[in-house]
Length: 153
Ligand SMILES: [Ca+2]
Image (cartoon, rainbow, N blue to C red; front, side):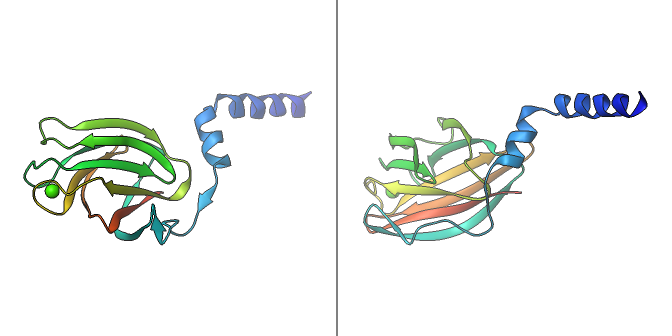
């Protein structure tokens, strides 16, 4: 009888582990950067790396420089997250919740639709993983896309 009791206890413990943890374990892990060399006919440049502790993150974007009419799209991996958004100031951020596709390496890509009155197209982006918040500056122009490696630890 006793071994059965242990078995049931193990099953019980497993069942109370949140689906989120099980889902995380099953999620594919990228050990290296997956930024393509180019996207949309423009070269991609990796401008830095941000580490997060969760696949669920909140992104906010605003114009890093003078507000000069910069229009952007933001992609995470291949997914369009923010479409054709004209950047405003830090008092009027665009905020979006995202669940990252992978453990390990994901990436954020800034596509510039224009450069505003003052080149280049500059974006301040904050990345909140529920524990800490990182600010990062991305720049793109009409020939190249700025990207960030976003790594889920
Ligand atoms: Ca600009």
